[in-house]
Amino acid sequence: QPGTDFRDAVAVAMVLREVLDELGITGYPKTSGGRGVHVAVRIRPEWDFVDVRHAVIALAREVERRVPDKATTSWWKEDRGERVFLDFNQAARDRTIASAWSVRGTPRATVSTPVTWERLSTVDPGDFDVFTVPKYLADNGDPHVGLDDEAFGIETLLEWYEADGRGEMPYPPDYPKMPGEPMRVQPSRKRN
Image 1 (cartoon, one colour):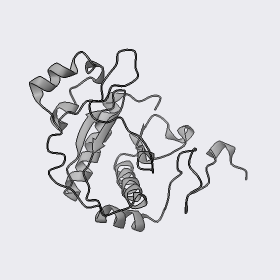
Image 2 (cartoon, helix red, strand yellow):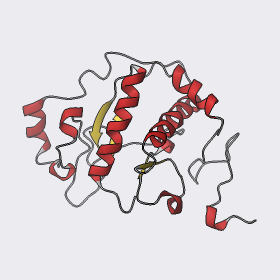
Image 3 (cartoon, rainbow, N blue to C red):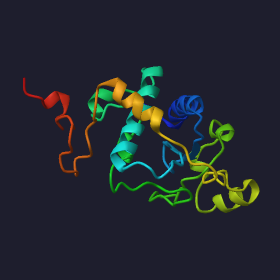
Image 4 (spheres, one colour):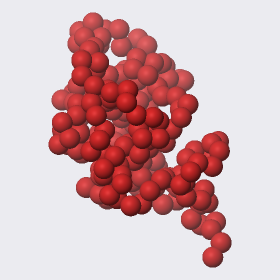
């Protein structure tokens, strides 16, 4: 989001971590390979993608509620201001992500790199590229080695989603209209 940088994303990710900790859920951060932060959470395979999406929306809305001056769930860029966008649409059917250790299509071939929460606030994502990551991995091991050790439930997040009452959020523009989805019209283009 224009007006935000990696440090802003880290600050918001730390709030996300607080929420996950309160839920008893372990999240695993990584650089996106760009300006963002991704947090992976292993969940039990008991829910369909709509439930998982609703849990992600509830989590994002809770982070936004705690730091509304720093984070937003607004799908429309014109409404975001200089706040970090919590991209709930990564939890939509058939979405792709930059997986851990994946090389991004940048001139420097940056790498989406797993880090510990403690290290997240001190790294520069530009330091991780195809030349530096092998040494980083050899020196530090895989910070996500425990990712599959425990799978978590999303029941509380689904309760939050229902209690919130705001319902579904817009899907990406290349998706068919989904049940309960609000209109996909930019606020500045809405007809009165």
